[in-house]
Length: 388
Image (cartoon, rainbow, N blue to C red; front, side, top):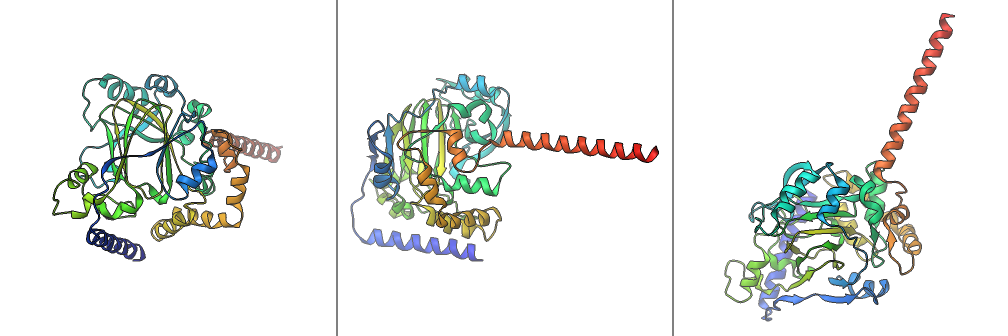
């Protein structure tokens, strides 16, 4: 009941905010607004935190210097026939998160060949399957982890640390890899648990559109079954509403929509709570991560506590977030390398994961095998002794 009440309260607050904005008589801010862009060669982690992360402002970091030179062909060579889950946007009326529906699983090389490489220049339909948000650390660290460095601007992630505690065998998910064909997209969405988000592009170009989190109410979000909102319309409709009468959802045209074309080597930072939509203008390969740090831990904790009313994992995640106040957060900040990017394995070790899930599971399997062999030998020796 508390979760349902929280969802109802959010709907009421959104309606009040729309009425306030509509009665204010302010002019629509516009669409296609540029995102703040900075040079990764000169901007420091402290400046990124003060200008963008802490106040919740999206930005693009050019010349970031962290994206590996991954192509679809290289990923096929590295990942081979290991099976991967696929997602697709089949309908703009979907109420799934980001309008993404499960599209089964397939060997990676078959998926890449059929749905990516063979679709180049063919005007691929938007409903083609995508590899979306596939965990590098959990599923393919053996093939990809040594190429990955974590950007110096985002050195702390309490969500990774909490996931390592709550799931010591399967581990944390971030960072993740994406592979998608030209013409595919992910629908308008907000990332889970009030986490911040970054993505760096390895190959191709993506069109990113981001709405300030203070304008979320203007998009008429709806909470249907959990705290991931769906949207009755998209940013294309919002753009049309900004220049024409739109009686059904009059506040839609008041939302500011920032836009950028992300290219290889760029990083986009999306603050917690900011709605966004992404389109693949070409075949793309990307790496991303969600994270919780000092700037958003209070919001993430409140969200986890609400979700903990109906699910067990968020209860433990919330407990870890509360524990951060006892010094863990400061320790993670103090242990971060000063002003340099960090290899993924070192980043994970700082956050409590000295080994990948695959490595840990192999050790556990070996230990179990030794225990079984030893136990069998002892039983056999005992049986022989009793027969003597």
